[in-house]
Image 1 (cartoon, rainbow, N blue to C red):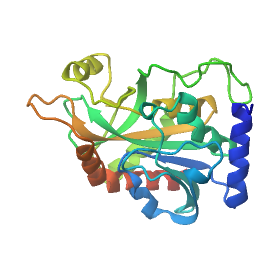
Image 2 (cartoon, helix red, strand yellow):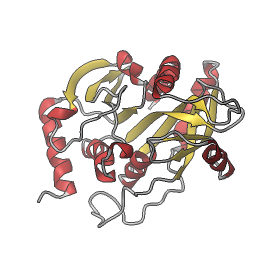
Image 3 (cartoon, helix red, strand yellow):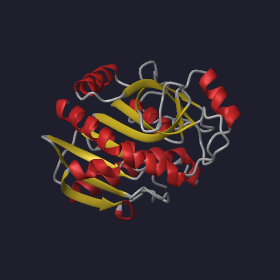
Length: 273
């Protein structure tokens, strides 16, 4: 039976046989945030279905392919479509692409997501640079035997999001007069949106935004000693008092409206790396 390390190496070798570029920056595009692809001068694309050991994305709004190319002068690898724990994948499958990125030489991981906001100063469409997270998933991506070739047994998580990258992004946002917050992301398994009581509880324990992704990928990226930058688009507000509901379509619409702003911020950040 092929172990995780061998699967990673086989997938990385397959990608190397198809792609000449050696990117140092990996980008995971979240719900509705595929607009960044339009800014990339594409060199190669590989469908997830063609990759050995890769899961296949099942969620509306997630394309399901790797894109390689240039973002400005920087060589990048983009994941158009991510894998979620709520789809039924285990944590090893959810985070497998990040392991492959590391094997390909990726040093910096940039992650985006759509999130619900609990902070009263946030509005729908706002961008939030993630400075820390609270892991509320019922499964941990590092649970089980540890392979020292992939990382240490007990991973330090005191600085999951790179402070230098956060500072750079804040300066870029300021120069563009972009409304950007810095906050804490809570990661839950989904696929239900949170109840009013859950939104209140999450804010009480220190979270500003909440979503169903990002945390597992970030943990594994840090396990691989990658630098991480992450940002959320606030697509709904869990602090609303009126009796209205949230749909996936609304989330996608809000994410798509804010996508050009986040894409521009990320493109400028990548150019400075």
